[in-house]
Length: 230
Image 1 (cartoon, rainbow, N blue to C red):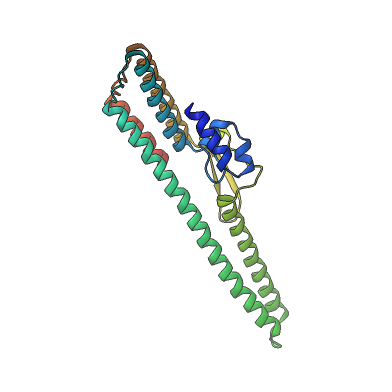
Image 2: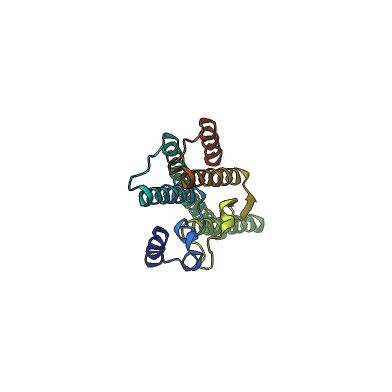
């Protein structure tokens, strides 16, 4: 029910065509750049696991389920990862805007120098050619910086969130080139998260209580999320 309500909100509020066409769980955990977010998946997954456990136990016994300290720690870890990922995304956008401003200033200086060189009757042809090449290179850097910024804040309409986004790291370089690689830290975090969620659900189904998460496993989850953020 919660996923269905979230999907209704997503369809009514999200405007990006690719995100709207994606499989509905991916719409819920998508970022503004139309990528599926692993940190947001953690938040949604743990929220649904605890909510489902509470409803299940309440339906059988009429009592609310006790939330263990380990579960609270896991929620805190997931929330910290989500905040860190959001801060990283915002820093990327801020950096891209700064790169664009720097490139535009350099392009303006190169264009001004070219104009002066072209108007100088004493300038040689080599000097004019060099000034023209410098102006062209500066314009290309501006175009690349614009492309990088647009990729971050205004993705292509055909870009759809996919499950592979959860373990594939994609970066847009300052020259506009997009690189992709399997991120083992993302895979590690996803795997440990799914294992823990299944462990909690199975225990709730059989014992009607949320189990205490072992300290070692909490430490493992904290390290995994820390590596992911790093």
